[in-house]
Structures are given as structure tokens and as C-alpha cells.
Length: 271
Image (tube, rainbow, N blue to C red):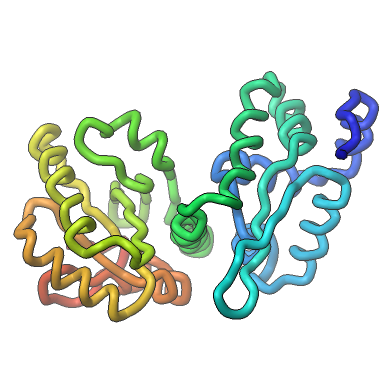
């Protein structure tokens, strides 16, 4: 049983946290879960940083973070990290906000360990990390907005429920895009059926917003492109890539293929 979160214990824990730790806690609260590789990429020098693993283990041992390792059919899955109750309390103090506004979300984050959507969640966070790093390493690039599924449902739930929405500013313009992460488990027809909602949204708002799809393999990417091209939705641009291609090259490189024939484009040139 974890120790009671007394004011004295929280004050002691607070002395052990760095500004980077608080940024990590804030990011985990916003995005619920990150893997070791994702934390290392966002907050340390390399994705295999030993310092990242060491710091995460320290935060776990003092009770600020919880972790779990999902089952993997082959090999071993990466550790997944979420806020522990003590982490939520410390973040609330740091933000000068009531802990009641942060703790429930932190408590629900651990439910992802048993969720059928865990791999979907991790894959979508890979896209977030790749886009964040691209914006960080390219002058004049900024990831201004990243809304999760719940926030998207509040805005557009009558028409579509995208996995995420981003707003990306770059030297030649501003891109708004919806994101869908395909784990390869849904029938192609079910993925294709989502385009009708995006068409209805474009007609209702008179705003055309591209849909970016990440998927699991080159074969799945090809099959998706072929199936989506048959939906005849020219008013809603759809671009597809694999998570591996996106992570390796970054979204500002020409990794996004159209559903119809044509060259791959970068995030800054989806036309």
C-alpha cells in the first residue's frame, strides 16, 4: 500500500523534482500515457537515453509515476508511464490548481493497461512525438494545437470523432488537420466509412480540413490507399503514411502519400 499523501510527504517529494520533471508530469496529465522511448525523445537527448530510464525509475520509486509493461507476442514491450496519485497532487500544487481537477484523469490513465485501445493510444502518441520534435528542430515551425479524441468530440462529434486534431504553423503557412491512427485491425470498409463524416463536416462548415492517417505497415498503407481512393471524396484530402516512416523521417519530410496516384508530400505541402 502506498504511503498516505500527507502534506509533509508531498513537501518532501516536491524538493526532489526538477523543472523538467514538472514538465513531464504536465505532459503525462495531458496525454495520459507515454512509453520510455517517447519520454526519452521528448525530454532527453536520444530515444535510448540511459538518463531517461534512470530518471523515470527514480520518479517511480518515490511514488510520483506508475508504470506497466503490456503483453507482447514476441520480444518485450516498452514500459508505459502514467501519473501516480502523488504526481497528480504535486502537479496540482505546482499549477496552483485544485487536485480534484487533476486526480481523476490520472486515476483513469492506469486503466489503459487493460484497454483494448492501448496500442492505438501508443501509436497516436508516436505521431505526437514525431510532430513535436519536427517543430522543435525546424526554425519557424510550431505545433500550436494538439487536441485529443475527447476534445475533438466536443467540437465536431455531430459529424466526426477524429483521434486528434493538430494546428501546425510553418514559415510558409498554417496547417489544420485531423488525425486518424489505424492499427490494422479494423476492416478497410470501416475505415473508409469514416470519410463520409468528414465530407459532411466540410459541407456544414465550408472548411476543407485534410485527414492524415498513420498505419502499421507499407502493405496496410497500400491497401488503405486503394480502398479510400474508391470512396471518391476529392473535397476532403486524405494522406497516409506508416508510423515507422513518420518516426524515422519526421512529418515535415515527404512521407504523406495521397490515396490516388501522386507524389508524397510533407506536412507543409499537402496540396
